[in-house]
Image (cartoon, rainbow, N blue to C red; front, side, top):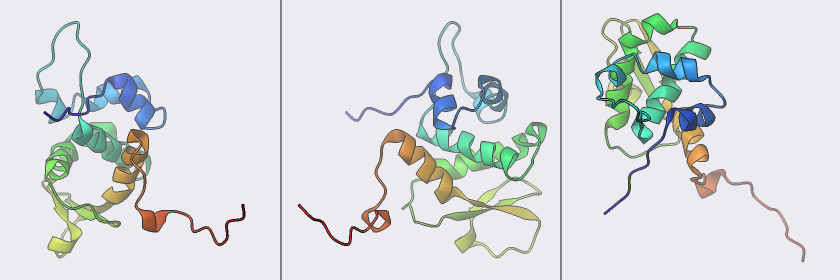
Length: 148
């Protein structure tokens, strides 16, 4: 049986470069996290999809300047998109529609309405580094000569 990764709020804070616990708790009040069952006196547990979603929400706040009270419009669509099994590419741009928060691969949609374009590959790489997953060999530094 395969053991799934599981993270606590403390792990999330560390993975997201020291983001505060209060920010993580604010994000857990957004869908789909607000709809997930929690247990008294037990730490909330997150999986890799949750971690990626929280990283994307952090980017929306820090880079795009979206206020936390508006993130709920996008959070469930991001989580749904990130939960889909798909081949990971070096550049994974997604389009987040403003009117309904649906997230679509930029390759699969023509942009003709208001929305945001996010580079999800950056967030995947950030989480993979946290998890200790090495980058693909094509991204490793090339050593010109090795002397012994």
